[in-house]
Image (cartoon, rainbow, N blue to C red):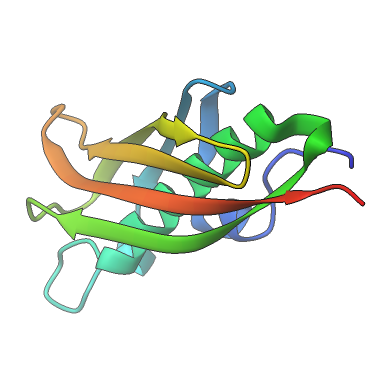
Length: 128
C-alpha cells in the first residue's frame, strides 16, 4: 500500500500538516467564517475533523506498508469557545496494537489555550 499525504477533506478544511510522524502529528489551520456557527464561534465539527485527521495520519504513518487505517470512533470535547484565528491540533498515540490504535489529540488556539481535546480509535486493516 502506498502512503499518500492528506488531501480531499483536509485540503477543503485548510489543514496544513506542520509535523508528520508515526509518534506525533501537528496540524494547523486558520478559522474562517465558513468554520463558524451562526453565533460566531467555531463549529464543533471543525474540531472533530481536525482531531480525526491528525490521529488518522499519525496512525497511517505508524502502520506504514503493513496496511491502512480507518477511524471507528471519534470522541471530541469542546472545552472553550473560540472565534476566528489560528488553531493547532497535536496528536500522539495512546495505544498501538496489532488490530487497533488509540490516539489522543489536543487543539489549542493562537493564545495556546486548550479549546478542544479528543481521541480517535482506529482499526488497522492489514494489506492483502
